[in-house]
Image (cartoon, rainbow, N blue to C red):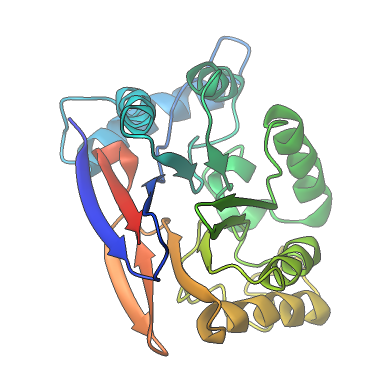
Length: 269
């Protein structure tokens, strides 16, 4: 039922490791406790993703459960890079926590985890954003949503949050610390490194309240991802399509959405 793309990354480790990369599940659940407009929106978005996904035989929830089962079956580390939920509803939070309970995975959020509606830039005024970050952290307590690192088979596997089109100072500082540990690094985030919004130097909308310093810090990490030889590859989602881009001799991968049944099995050798 899953449409699995196989990718090999050769970095010269002794024993290969496996990672199953999933992204953009876009669960669309609500309960009677969610506002009526969210209930109606989730009904409409369910139909939207079914059509965009090519009218598949399975739902995003079924694909999500199957990806977890498959990763465990083959001994792969499961990594999800955001937009697991379509918007922040009680129904989506209950469903995603039910699905992942008892299963090991790594997670980095996307923009949709921060939304109550599907109009992204109109919601990034700072007080709203601060409240939503706390809600996300509270509901995904098992994860550090900004940065996580695991040494797997001699590879430093990192999730770094750029779901709102920038890397915050905490993420950048943690990343620079991890680079100094000396392991080869692969990085998983929501936005691809060549996404136009990720490399900006000033806000692209009046409600985006980032400073010049915020952008300088974010771009410091972006340059390391692109140029530092210790970073062997990056993996992302967001675009709802599969791509590979070679930038400065390094391959950066974009994985299509799991709501279509798409995922990427990565073998690092």
